[in-house]
Length: 68
Image (tube, rainbow, N blue to C red; front, side, top):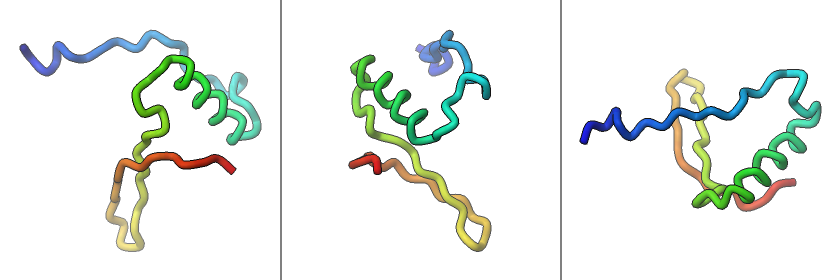
C-alpha cells in the first residue's frame, strides 16, 4: 500500500467570511459541536503552534479542557 492511497478527499464546503460568526468563540463552539455530533475520536485534541522571540516555530498537540 502506498501512503498516498490513504489520502481522503474532503468535500465539505469552505468557510466564507460572510458565513462566519462575528464572534470567534461562537464560531469555535459551532465547529466543536459539529465534531461532537460526528463522533470524532478526541474532538478536543488540537495542534497549538507558536513562534518564539527568535522566530523559531514550535508545535505541540494539546487537549482542550474548557472554553471561557
